[in-house]
Amino acid sequence: MTVAISILFAALVGGVVFALIDNVGRRERPVSDWTPPEPPPPKREPRVPNPPPVPDRLWSGWQGD
Image 1 (tube, helix red, strand yellow):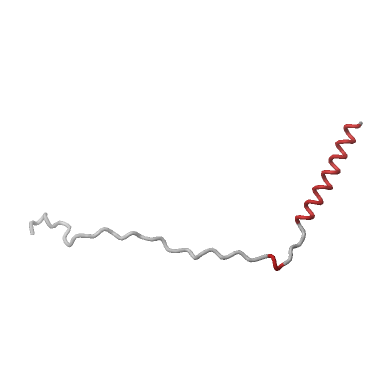
Image 2: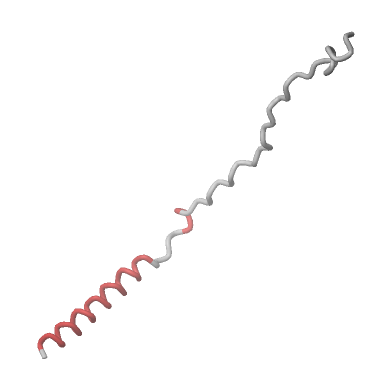
């Protein structure tokens, strides 16, 4: 019987403590303390590397010019 009463008492005390902690966390904060988050920076286009140089004639040795 003592064990059952102590379990019920612990559950009651735990519920009260939880309710008090939850109430403190939900209190309304003053509006002046809140600052809006900064927007993310705009996305940049991906950087494309420069293509390799292309010679004037691709087959310069083929025709013997």
